[in-house]
Length: 245
Ligand SMILES: Nc1ncnc2c1ncn2[C@@H]1O[C@H](COP(=O)(O)OP(=O)(O)OP(=O)(O)O)[C@@H](O)[C@H]1O
Image 1 (cartoon, rainbow, N blue to C red):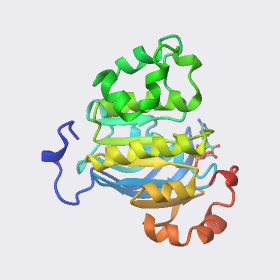
Image 2: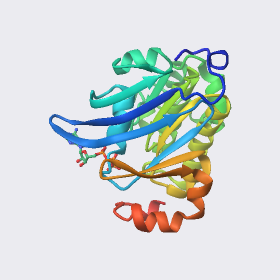
Image 3: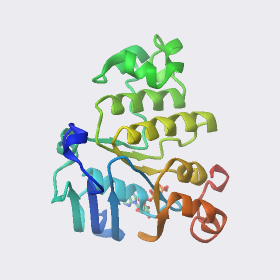
Image 4: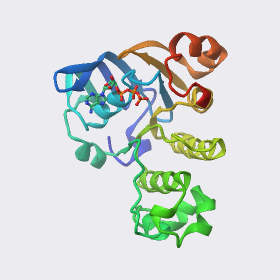
């Protein structure tokens, strides 16, 4: 992976391929044999009830936890690089916890991104009125916008985002997902874990449904959206936040 996107990737080649991934904590595997492909320009949603192993899968792909078995290929090359090296190769990993500097102003938080304030405000104009507010006093949604603007400012070619919208109002969720969609439209590959199933299927191109550590179903998001009631009943009914989808 490099930061020079377009010339590097051609056709339909995956930028990331996961083959028979097993990962977990200590000696306890919680992800059993996951296969998954991410292509430039695509948003891929990873759905599933709480505890299915979605976050663990993301952490393994990001290099935050080691794999127990299986392969993670970046641009067709097997990698065991740790998180910070994958970030240098062009990955942005947005974990569930919100990453703002609480005592720095919103303005200074945004300036930490590599393309600066104006690009961030073009992405999220609503932050313009909040520039002097310390990061810690921004709303949850605003904090998430700041974190996302900073992550996207590096023009990553792989974006891994874990429950961006946890606890946020529907309109804010739409704003965040729209920013993710634009990054994909500009060429990034995106892997998204999202509790709002319908929103996730609307914004994504392809989706995987995970349960008990394995992929149980996959398909184009359009196909899955057509049978979303059935999918929610059959695969996602263990979700702790069914009202959120
Ligand atoms: N740090 C950890 N140490 C040990 N077990 C963990 C750890 N984190 C998660 N687990 C366990 O791994 C399993 C999968 O968790 P994971 O967070 O990957 O699921 P998830 O699909 O992301 O669900 P959620 O939506 O609740 O985050 C769960 O049984 C969980 O209890």
